[in-house]
Image (cartoon, rainbow, N blue to C red; front, side, top):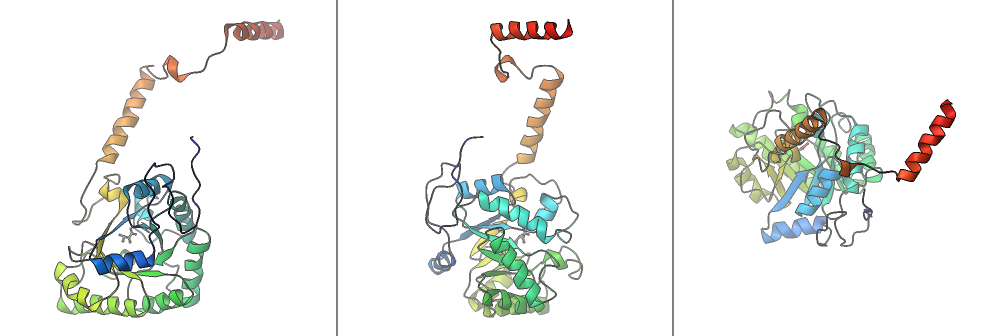
Length: 307
Ligand code: KIV
């Protein structure tokens, strides 16, 4: 492996580790607010490990979310619910090592914040202290509004998440779009306003009709990041494995595929398997050599032992 610069927590601009990407200033909460003021779209993507974070860095995104979608995309769980705080910390730490510039957000997993403000603050602190995250995200309105306020008061920036909130998919009637009735849409907008009042710096709107986003936007000052919430949001987020075509599970309607990486990976591993089976790999250039003298001496040593 080649030597690569280490990621440091310094807020100064520096090159993306191992990517050769040009230096750009570190994204802060003020950068995001500035983008909103200028009407510049904010780009967010998920990443869950060192190589995916390096890709996000090289692509120049503004925010990286270590989403609990990792439960399904990288850990193979059937939903986001089972992933633990320890697992999320491990993934977020790896992502941190691949990033210099984007704002890094750790997604509080199910069960790590709902029970009390103390639990929520302790979990958020783990993301910051152990994994080097800049901020955390939590789902829903309701009791999450109070949890968001407590985490913000503890000095950690919080991102909200309303609409389809996968951690509570069962009570929402499954993985379905939200806010299609006026009453439910009102709840989504009221939750968003309450999360902003609690101090959130941004909110994810997931799987809601564009009309709801259009009506919510004038009521909110913080950047709104949409995923299946229409074009009016201040920015967009997609799951890394969905957008690159790495994950072969069901894709929601809002997913646009920008690559077929899974197919490329299967092709590569199959070609390797064929080469091994046909003895085409390894070829001479993949091996190491011993000088004829040393080989001769070895043979002599071996025959001395067996004789
Ligand atoms: O976990 C996740 O990836 C998310 C995004 C879809 C916003 O919450």
